[in-house]
Length: 411
Image 1 (tube, rainbow, N blue to C red):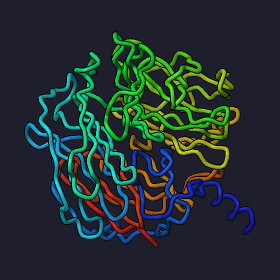
Image 2 (tube, helix red, strand yellow):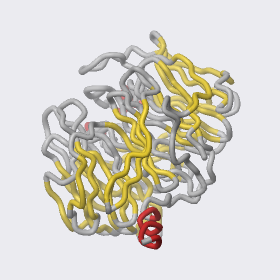
Image 3 (cartoon, rainbow, N blue to C red):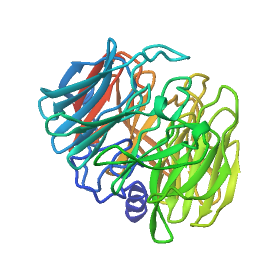
């Protein structure tokens, strides 16, 4: 029995080799929601929840923070400015601030703040605002190194909520799901050093899903879900390797980041009747293994991959109910379903899951194919939790509509 329990706990062991203390981009070191292998979480929380290290007020937006080298980078909107701030991760004290103007108003909802998590890459920070402003700053000082107004330059539509696909840095390129369909600039690569366009590819409208780096044929490629398709692009040249339809017209969004359950295999998911696809892929083609409207059709929660299984939230934030499910990645078999769990986002570390639910509840879970165990729960903030949390060096960075808090969740 002891060996069986240890094997089950190992299924959620983090796969990244990045050192604890960094969550430098959307969904962590490898863009899969999994923390560094040496990240350690407490097994329980006090009745009142984890100890709060610091908190501060924030402006509009749903962009979670990025954390690296002792700095937390916050991206939010104050009045008519999109503001990037560096914060001392230990104390919450401000280090520097930079901003640029914005006139964006969303077609749906309110606020008009940025949606994309900042990307910390070496000595640079890249941010992508709701109105398509792509900016690169010095991480130590906040000095602006370059800026591009991508929606204006490439004729992209702003969409329901504004630009929401977090850029990806691959080598010397910043790759962005711009959505300039009429100018064959659906995806554009910019030089990290200068901001100059390097290549543009496809006539794909933009989605809210972040692209991820994958290897194909021994070369770096970009796996990306656009408004209506899933594609593989050569990271160096922008050459389209393959494309398959994913998405539909009408009031729908593709927002969950694609994940790689195993080498040469991908999984994409969306709600609104779009469903999911699990496919084997190489440089030449993607071949579906299983697909359909279920068992995991998620509005924007990116599922966690572990031990041949997918752990995700099936359903929508705006149209309940939503269930937490465990699915066998090889064949799509539903292993278990926690009905009425509620919507939110997930991250994984130290054999555990952290769920930040949109209704404000924060949960510490242990999920294995054998079932789900709730270890702790609390409500650290009174508002809606839609921004993706960040986990670094035992600290969880969580924000609602008005407040960013840093919680001590480490062991």
